[in-house]
Length: 109
Image 1 (tube, rainbow, N blue to C red):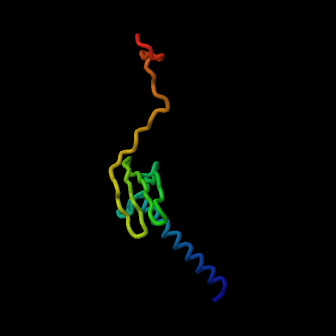
Image 2: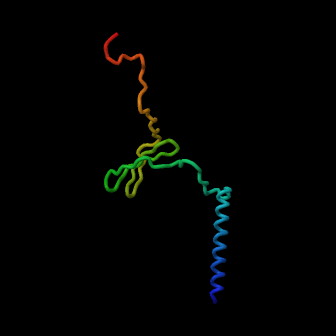
């Protein structure tokens, strides 16, 4: 075989692989594959909030999914759900509003 045959084979391979990739991308965008979910734009639904190692082999992970937190104990061979359905803490305000009718000095009226 000559170099032109190798070049033609390589270009044909690139063309076929790019067609397969293009069809897969279009199918995913149009929802042609029901088993493969579409990627959502925006904030992800799942994230690890905190992780604390207990010892060299185990760690506790706080995972948030759809505004609900789950506490999971991870070990080398096991995963244990410690607590589920934890509501995240409400955002606290930096300064508490002061009432105007309180006596600041502490003396009775």
